[in-house]
Image (cartoon, rainbow, N blue to C red; front, side, top):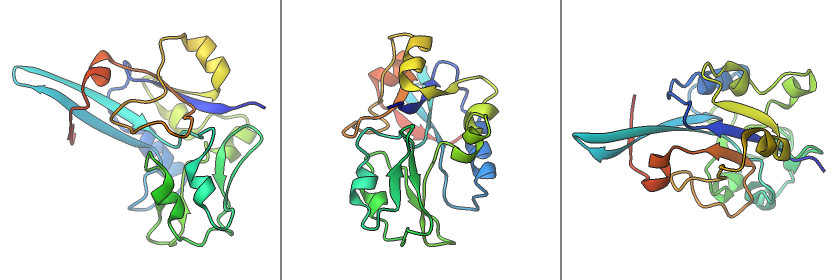
Length: 191
């Protein structure tokens, strides 16, 4: 079976949040839920300050904790490995929200239901890449079969950063990490 995933090149990311905005726009999300989050972190103190950015969304995990905890079966894996939500089966109980070690499913305050990245399933069926990937002006994001992404971008990739959380579910996100992000979590900053 094919397994899709995201590639994130942290060395290219400028923290512009274009991917975050494109995702909100494509999914017609109001105030509140953010399915792709860009966070900025500061490491060190003056005069030796460093900064890095993290763009993260659902990792479409090998063994999704969100799916395992959903009491209605609203979360499933597609043939290509994407973890998707059935809005009609969701009851808004937030079991998936609490189960995800990465904090990706969220409750939409307006609908009362959970929402999460589905890797733009409908767009991909039409031949496009996910909105976040298409929008990134620095080409810091890519998407596809994880084995093909590994082959394309090399072996010097990680699947998790300590700032994101511990990988207990088999993340299918590949990251070309900046050295500073591997050394220190840093502190959150708002840009």
